[in-house]
Amino acid sequence: MAIVKPKKHPPHMDMTPMVDLAFLLLTFFIMTATFKTNDAEVNTPSSVSTIKVPDDKIMIISIDKDGKVFFGVDAQSTRISMLDNIAQSKGITFTDLEKKKFSLQSSFGVPLNQLKAFLNTPDAQMAQIKQPGIPVDSTGTSQLADWVYAARKADPGLRIALKGDNIAKFPVFKDVLGNLQSQNINRFNLITASEQAPAGFSMD
Amino acid sequence: MSAIVETGGGGKGDGKVRGKKLNTNVDMTPMVDLGFLLITFFMLATTMSKPTSMTLNVPDKTEKVETEPLKASKVLTLFLGKNDDVYYLDGVAADDPKAEESLKTTRFGSDLRSVIFESSKRINAAYPKDEKGFGAFVVVIKPLVVSTYKNMVDVLDEMAITKSKKYALVDELTDSEKKLLGDKAKP
Image (cartoon, rainbow over all chains, first blue to last red):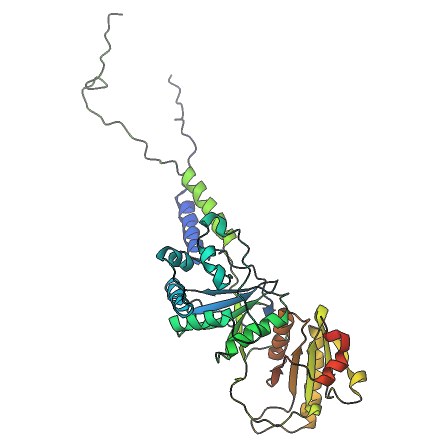
């Protein structure tokens, strides 16, 4: 009598649904990811405000914990025309390569006279450079004011956001404010982290 | 020994040409591995909480608006000092002889909030509302040079929480205030 041997199959599970799910999640996370840039590291204070920061058409002035000021504009084309504007007003010329490199910087904090040298450093070293910050003084007419002017000339619709570090000292903020007010900018967005409002509080 | 095994050609010997059954199961494990690796990466790299923004409107410096001077009795003055201390003068001007003893210290958070609430209740009850329907209560915020950006945001936040609509951010101290605060205002 022949013995019926069960056919040996390797155990097989249908992984298709799991793969579907995995890639769905992957797609979601790729879409929502915002990449870390080599911006100044700023720990913002929190507020109960629920207004979101606009994504586009925004210039961000950051103040890091040492009171150094950084400046950034969101769109790359705006960055290039901003650089053109400032080059024109200050009588400096930038090569196409320098412009290209500048357009890749999401924010920068170098004085104008060091900008060329900064843009000519190799990519690998760029992240390591300690940027000294944009000079800001209390008279309201410093390089930050020039940059803001150049940026607004490049795109008049830019909104202005200030992003300060928790432990940045108030006088730096005051100087930045003075620079902006000298150009008649009186409305700002202060970027903060969100925080739970105390009980019984309603926003209206 | 005499049997010769046929090789090649038709295959099994019964003459039928049969295509070899291909295994259609593709091993998906490496793909799944990679998929989950990427998911993990993106999950860790994504920040879910978007930053919020608060709007700050400052008065135009170029245009001079004539305003009557504030009555000290309607004003709560907050001085933001170092180490997150808040000194306050409730309804007393800095040049008042009583100022020294009425200068008190509080902390951010619920302490400051109750100071603001109490002061606004007292002042709004004592004075009629103005023509725009706002209470008479005014907060003057004076960040000292030793205060931080966080202090300023916190105090503006406190204005939103306590719904104090009339407040002013002033960065210059008067002479009497300088005298009153003394060392507290020095870096």
